[in-house]
Amino acid sequence: MHRALRHVVDSIERHGWSVELKLTEKPGDATSLSEQAADAGLDVVIVAGGDGTLNEAVNGLVGSDTAL
Image (tube, rainbow, N blue to C red; front, side):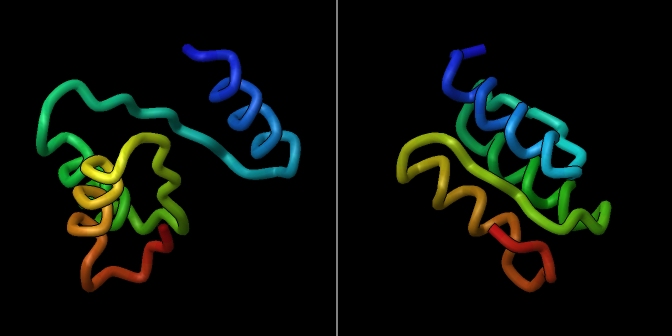
């Protein structure tokens, strides 16, 4: 994992949040992962990627109460 991403995850965990890191491998993965997070009732999805990854994550969260 990239050192900067590890730093972000560590910082979030130090503030009491539980973090589950998921990596995308192909188009559509961010949509599916975001939908799964929303279906599981998770509070927040954090996306590290480009505009395509962000767009997919937004589409996966439409209609849910999970924040991006």
